[in-house]
Amino acid sequence: MDFNAWVTACKGALEQLFMLSAPMQLLVFVIHGVIVWGIAFSFLRYFNRKPEVLQWTPVAPFFAAISMIFALFLAFHAADIWTHKREAERAFIQAGSAIKRFDEMVSPTQLNIPEAHRELGRYVKYVYKDEWRKNRNQRGSDRAEGAFRNLQDVVLKATQALPGPTATQLNVLMNDISRTRSDRLWIGGNHTEVSSWLAVILLGFLTHLAVASVHFDRQRAGAIALALLASTTTIGYWSLGIVADPYRHSGQLNPAAWMDHLPD
Image (cartoon, rainbow, N blue to C red):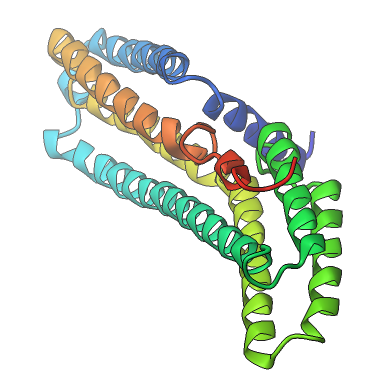
């Protein structure tokens, strides 16, 4: 397996993990914490049995060098995840606003363009059924793309007979719908940074070894310190894992609300 295939496999595994429910994710991270604790404690016990254990034990402040790097990477990783979450929420709100305003403009009470109203309904329906529910916003839908192109054609024909400001407003709303769809699909396909997750997890593992190393001469104290660190990293990973996929909870960002006044 080459490097790119390995990265793709890791990304797929992480995405499957982030699709799990919060309790199942917690269970996975707890198992990871137990495994890391076991490896680190075995590392500690090995050197604890050395005849000259104090010669192998680093000075206590040594572990701070590795733990600070781990904390720094974890902070940057968390910032990226929360940034993606905010961008997803903003794109969802902006898309809903643009769709509803467009629907109002082409309604019978304003411009009365039934063809645009119908194609808008088809577009939203396919976005909801294909891109949100089936593809989990990881890739676009041919049916949604086709409906959007039909909507563009209808708007292009309609604007030729509309006043300039009105035509401009319709085109602006069309651009907003297109842009927010592109933003949503990009976030859905790129929210999992494999290299960042692997770096954070590896640095967390090295932090466990660093804590174990400064307790070579105190096995019981080391076991307690490692247990506390494993619990802390487990909670940290879990708190990021449950928000890593901003579209995991369809109830929070659900485009079905856009379809209230649109045709089936």
